[in-house]
Image (cartoon, rainbow over all chains, first blue to last red; front, side, top):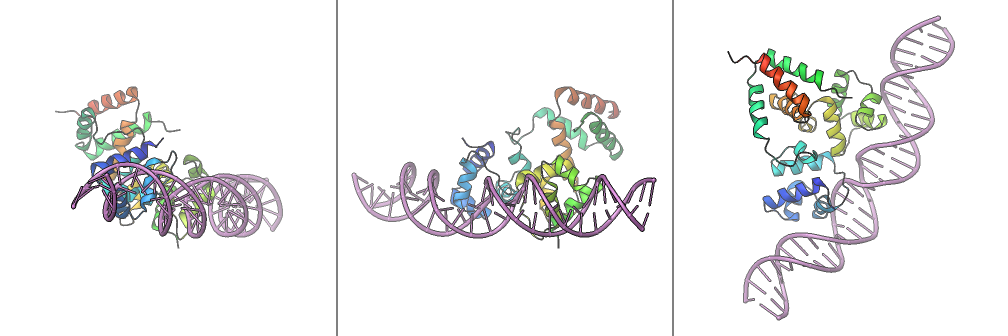
Length: 107
Length: 107
DNA sequence: TACGAAATACCTATATACCGAACTTTTTAC
DNA sequence: GTAAAAAGTTCGGTATATAGGTATTTCGTA
């Protein structure tokens, strides 16, 4: 019944052992609205609310909003790949970006 | 008169040489609403809209929303890059790995 | 110059984000 | 047990997000 976003919010709230009221206060919301975010079948919160919630949880907005992304940690494979990428010099990094642009055809 | 968010959206849109109409279409919005985001003195867009706009621009939601943040940091750039990579299908991901191997000559 | 098209600015209407307060359920302490 | 307190749920109302229209400006080109 709840959205994936709603489930994530509830999970993180529970992880931090916060009540609806506490999370509401920390994010400048009402507890009824936090409840709605967690439970209603369709929600469309403002960017500002989501941003403040992400702040309290210590996660990125992207993590909260991306339904594909169910876990906080990247896979080990990704971590290795990303470490190599961050260590590239600027020229090679630019080459890689260009290559990514070429194969990642966004319609 | 416009918000900092509005100015950022306009700046990025211009950088990508997009019209209001084009950005609207890419983000599933109306052009009038994109105009309002850029020009109205107060706006409170939904997380979904901002997320889709950030996607088109290739920036993080955090960059768009944080008024302090006027320029993209290294970690913003990396975050977007990594996100794109994780969303590639297996074939393209393999291509990218191969390309990385080619340019990343570990002496 | 003029004319159409494209871009921009603004207006109106509708759906819904979000709140406060009341209500119900669960937990805590005696 | 049972009463109070805390947590969670529901609901009605108001403000506003957003689409879709229309008016105005800019721009290319003959």
